[in-house]
Length: 493
Length: 98
Image (cartoon, rainbow over all chains, first blue to last red; front, side, top):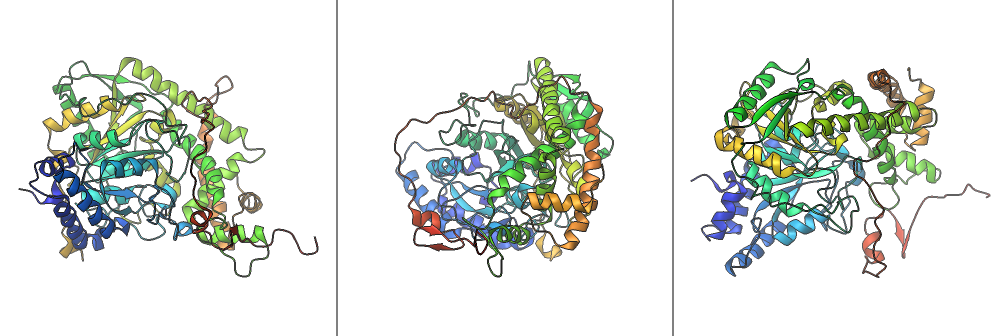
């Protein structure tokens, strides 16, 4: 029998339901695992062991009462530190929110708490979710459990590393341009970017409001279906969480790919993609064909404008959203020796934000400023229309599009920090889905030199059931998702 | 499109963002590189293309006009850097003599 921290959510839920283990035992196993590996991985910004054990005890009472329970009852999870948790500090990886304790729970937390989950802690991230490596955290970088010298990806790097390292059975992240799928790829997880409007953002600290979405990190597609089921659906507190029926995601996992049309976008095999990544994803496509899917080529002609459009739209929205961090209502504030209110704003923001956040506020403010609005922001919004139309046409002929999630495997810590634009190119395959509002996931494919490679599946808006079905069928036929990092802490010390 | 130091200072003022001299230097070069890479967007004729601010067909959503409990002032002020009674304390807004 594997250790309790090695299980999937559905395996642990089954053991809990049969009363073979208790949630307190399961939670203790995770807290011990965290004690062993966290000093090397650094996936968390805040640990909540007392809260976790009290939630586990409550879950055990419900399990003993034999209540018809959610499959998440008593399951230990980790939550990205961009999601508000009542009474538990929520920093967004920034100094400016170092002491911020939310007075309320995000809707996704209300739903997870209602399901009876155990929260182990809040995970590390690039400051305000801006980055692709978690090196932009104001606190410390998180390390990839597959190779501690490498990044876990980002911005949800802590959420990905926690699950990969056995520090949680699953986690939540947020994806604005790839921040769930890319770390999922680099850490060998199933990681879902939900369709725009599928999951409430109430209590998700806003980065780019037309792009941000919450989604799960798990060890397989079956677990992703369980977590997504718990958080999806309309919310009176978020008018962008629309009233589209939520299908039964677990029931969609039929294992059958007959009739599924898989499109391979010609533009997603760009120069600069590592040969090991190309080989892995090509092999995964052949496996899907062997499993009965029809595979054909498709063109998404405006792909090459995705990164540039995104790095105007996202910073523009961020510059507006981050205007609220002024040192008045909450968060870090510079007050000593300030001349007046304006000076207090400028000095609070200078000391409170890190370099990448400042860069994006500057780009965004520039793109929205008088004289440049038409040339940058408006043009990028028009390009978004063209990118969306590319996908609309592609989904007339195909159910799923397949590509690499990231052009590279996990890179070395420090490798891309000197050139911001080089870092932005990490998101070249993930950004278009955010611009178009469609759903996508990353699933583990064949490894490249011992490092994980993510295979991206893109589905039309609100078709999470379809991409989860394809991922599950692939995982029934392969064992890449079952591989776990050796995480040899001794030799790394 | 080159970015000058004056551009950086203007934009930083609009964003209420203080920058050190070294940060201004870095912004001039880094924003320059980033904006050079944005030039690719000028390749496409978008004159006939409508802009998409959102991918959803958005409609106004109106809540029912019903009173609901809200947080107590003390709860909301607990995170404030400075508060007095039920008020936020802020640095001087008006210049002296006004």
